[in-house]
Image (cartoon, rainbow, N blue to C red; front, top):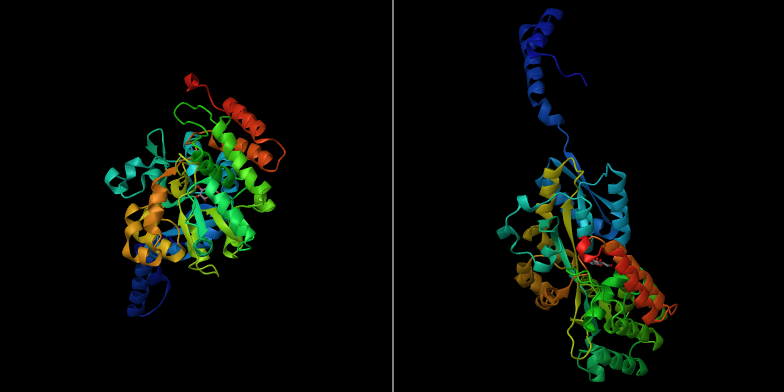
Length: 438
Ligand code: GLC
């Protein structure tokens, strides 16, 4: 594009080359002057910042991207659609960062990726950009999940915690209160199945992917066990409580409380079965609540904290998503504006009203408009505030992969729960540094 001729020269050229009347010369010169003076602003391209995320959520983001761009005309925000399973998105981010020159400015992160991404140096620290007072409305679990070795790398934009959905109509019909323990859940399931009130008792995620350890974290906590202690790096997978947790899950398949296909189900498969009215109980995340309210089971279900062994407490797996800035981003300031927008109370409220996702800000759980639409929100807050983190360690992805493989082997009866958990514990110990190695 030809642009740079000093204005004075241009005027002279126009005058000398043409025999135009003076007023026309003046007009042309003034038009040229206007064009030159507005030129830089008019042609300045907005910067494009990119984020990679699961495809269904890119659709939910679209109206918010439009709103953001309208408020920030100097920024284009592009949400690139990826696979649904969190670990597949993580793999793709990982390859992009390892190969260098990643196209992503923002990292939309599952809470369990933070230690690995931070330890690898792929994220920019955020604590300088925000005060503790500004952070005080965020749920502690979600916020802490964004920290690694004292630095903040992720601002939570939505929370998540696993819980038990149950068919309150069926329980009422059969005269049962909601179950508190594993034994009660088994008894109610079997009874309702025998009465022909439901095909299945209990649905959970048994596919070999990140949803499996997330679900298992809850069963493990409910039996009083643990996976990896993040402080001591002690591994608890071969302790009796962990073996009992696997035995419980396996027994739900053997006793036909759960369909045989449960070992291949992720969240969505179990949600569909539940909302088709096929089951009494479902373990899932908060997003199911509003989707199921548009189905034939509307008004017939409720939520409660996960069941546990008698004498133990409920464990909800702390999940959730948030935004960080890629170290390699050339537009960190624009990326930060995206984070401010998506983590703001205003956007989170609208996002939650639109799709029922759990906000990461405490105040929103008692927001009158949100509670009017989702009357379970105060209860949901209680579940989330009592949730358990999967081990926040830099080696999490590998530790999860080990657990996924051995759980899957035990659940599909290729190994006994004891053998599988012993092997999983041993492999995990080999993976983790000895404590004095740091
Ligand atoms: C949800 C949770 C996330 C978890 C995933 C497992 O997206 O928010 O933390 O890892 O489910 O499928």
